[in-house]
Amino acid sequence: MTTFLLRRLVNYLVLVIVATSFAYLLAGAALDPRSNYQGRNPPPPEYVVDKTLNEYNLNDKTPLLERYVTWAGNVATGDFGKTWEGVSVNEEVGRRIGVSLRLIILGVVLGSVTGVFIGAYAAVKQYGAFDRGSTFGSFVILSIPTVVIAVLLQVSAVFANDILGLKFFQYTGEYTPGLEGGLLTHALDRVQHLVLPTLTLALTQVATYSRYQRNMMLDVLGSDFVRTAMAKGLRRRTALIKHALRTALIPAVTYFAFTFGVLLAGTTFTEKIFGWHGMGELLIDSISRNDINSVAAVACFAAIAVLIAGLLSDIFYAILDPRVRIR
Image (cartoon, rainbow, N blue to C red):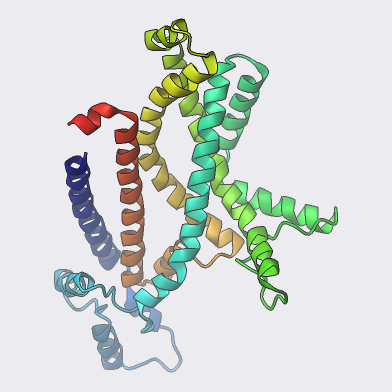
């Protein structure tokens, strides 16, 4: 198993390098940092602009491949360069990465675990009220874009706070600026701000996993090994959890890495709508400001996050399927 995981890890590292490199080359070809200096009054001299862009390795007069070699050499030492304003990209990413990870990790755990159990229970209660209700709810959620879900939750929070007089849900920012009180007060305030963005990401995950897990569970419920386990005297609940659910989870953990990329896209819009200053917001702002180095850094973060999800998927697959450990 160790050899299998090490081989996969090496493959993933190569993919991270390729994905980040392509992101830099695409951003370098499409974005124009020089345009940020145009339209100023008085206009800066061209030689000043060239000198500034050369300092940040953003001058479009330098061949793209030459800029890429310089950038790649810096990245190899852990330096993603500077923004067009001269701010360290490393510092900007370091400030924002924890914000995004908070949303992503909670969204993944809450969404995938809840979705798996809803789907498995719906399969056991096939065509029952729970199965029909969860199916209807999942299709409704899947038909609504993440942006719309975020806005609906935000509007609902405004209604609950202003009309009903509830003050639990906070819908703007990561925390309340200038809040007085102790550690418990600040922790509760963080939770209040975290609920709606996390729920926005988790709902789509719940709907997706519940549909997927229901189908996988139905495929194994009538299998011979499940009937044999119950024929040997194993209780039905134990047989369903230990044998049916474990087997049905194998395709779900494989699917995990692919849904993680969708979650990252959802995080981008969620952060912008709820005013969270994370990597998603940085990506949108970087593209609008023609900030090549920041775009490449965010792409690297996304590639690493997706490939870590793929590695975790491989580990869970090996745990659930002993044949992988044998190979």
